Image (cartoon, rainbow, N blue to C red; front, side, top):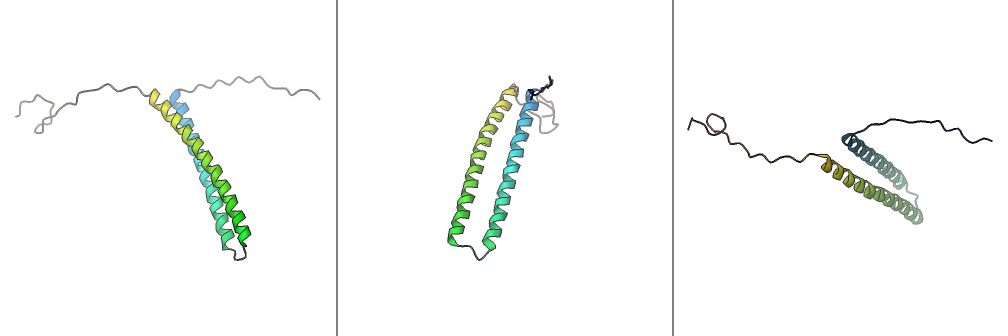
Length: 120
């Protein structure tokens, strides 16, 4: 057997910081959607199992332990997603230009022109 032949691929991807942060936010949203589907499926499974009248206490405790394990895993994923979101928001704050303070302009309540005005 010979070694695998790896092609020489040189992709040129050019993304600016704004595009990168948007992609990161999209990935966080997609992971959140995936976790919501997992939780929904687990809820439906629980409803079907609990609708059965023939479950013993031992079986219910086993189901409860499985649900707890799944919820712990989802919570861990949520913590990681929260940390990822915090890092992305830090990146977004850094890339925004700081706004220069502008003195608010006062307008005349009669003619709506900027002060000083001659209608008073």
